[in-house]
Length: 621
Image (cartoon, rainbow, N blue to C red; front, side):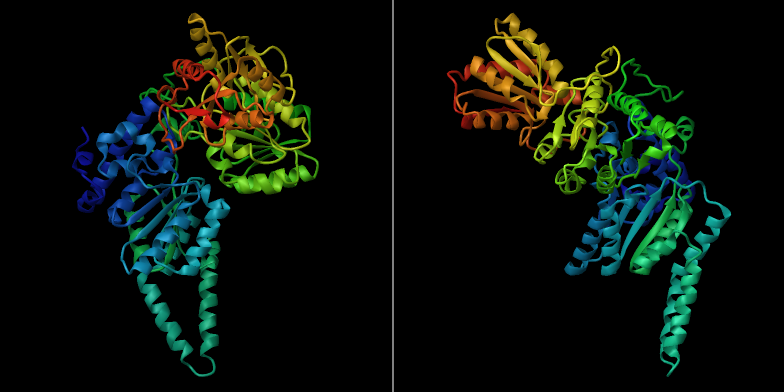
């Protein structure tokens, strides 16, 4: 029974609750989040750390009239509940009903909201909630500078999950911050400056002296001084788990009528002891027992991320020129502990990570950049111009590509093959399992130019590896199964279901080649053209958007080889953004499971006699 939460029919309900009731509401919301994520998994620690923050924002502001932008979905589950969508708890980790911006982009979008409000002559509040790691990214800093230049009324809430609980120094800083930005102080300050400037001869100097004294006071407010120099008022740090203090800070910021940054200090995992003790573990947790915190989905299979981390550490220990740069990818703690002088964690600054790695590579180091799939696109400008243009030996390990088996807790990586393969000089690899991932990493570090290996989140397939990985020959595919009637070319996690599909087809008298492409760029042209001539029917399978993906690369090879009469059927992801949902259900929907692939082969065979490549079809069911 959750009596307070049952009273909440929307954000407006919070306006009528006392501070004591809001505190009780926070406890009930935590119960719901823990209960939901116990069955689905998710970023539990971050969600629990932002509960009071979301409650205080809704108690002060009037959503949806006021615009609340959340920088990253891991902060927003409480917002989802308070928006009156308690019936959608089962989609809590999907962020049903929230405004979610891309990582680091909320400040820039909020500045756009505030400027549009001014141009339209409207009157509403604009709030951007940003994560402490995201604010280090270049686009976040550019957004802060633009917000300051425009000077429009808006609130930027910095959710700082890195600081320890406030010390006495921070308490003094918070007091001075409230004093310097308070309404009474602001009014008196402006009146005094106006009077001083009116004094003939010395007024300007006296006003300048007051400004310098104020700056000296603000100098006590580290890191507030940095934001003030940008032209932003600063409040904080504020304890992020005391609703009364949060409300007071937000009300003060709203009354100032200009851009204000409120620095809120939160602790990940608050309210659930296992998560408090191991916040990193519970920010990427699978299903667990809420009573004990122990995982309920036991598997002996290592994840792709674990296999990558193990392989990278082994290669780095054998080669002192190997360095690791990570931008938002966990799992490299052992590397950081054993080789701290060669490990660099730049937080959410993916663009910086790529350019930084380029600098390392130009000085003879082998830089490996571990970056999430959703972040590599933000750093693609640097990938193209700072790495590929200069043909530098930087290896990109892109985690979360394809349809990761993580219960739908994160965005699917639908565009990595399409974006990365267009970069000149890039070698692009997709492993069929965690053992092949290790071999690809070793091959990449042996190259004189850039390479990328993209792999999914979640557990691998559980392969046994005998001895150290053997580097692969660049551009050489693997023939997994012989055939006679059709060729199935698959890459990455699609290889296994392609083999299963071939088994089903064999029972129907259809013998299908199955090829593990391994390399999306360069493709094994010789084997591809040989099979195209031999069977005349090719089916490509990929966990990537059909537009510009692996299947498109196959079509390009056949066109260049003047084999336009080959029937090609492509199976992949549709041309739309796909919400985080269970990868198993999505594979069935778009025909990427064994039965869907077999059905695609049947359709391709029905197209014979061969058709022109300009009629090649794509299948997303």
